[in-house]
Length: 55
Ligand SMILES: [Zn+2]
Image (cartoon, rainbow, N blue to C red; front, side, top):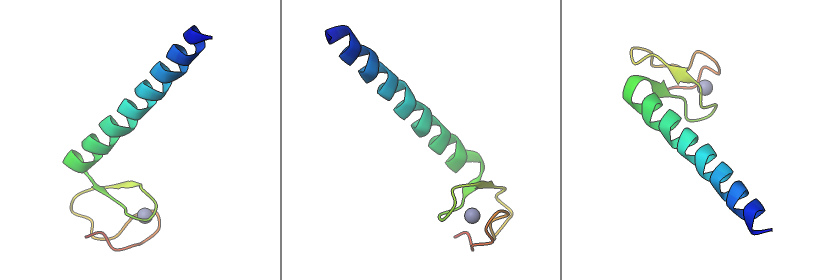
């Protein structure tokens, strides 16, 4: 039972760190759309996916 908890905890941790890494990378290299989360090149001022204005 304890093993299962550790396994699930590690899985969540890996998943969370992956999300954080993606977020940091996205912020460093791209503009992230606020509404749909897709990555857009820095020169863009509109999302290429949903067309929302990027600040
Ligand atoms: Zn978008």
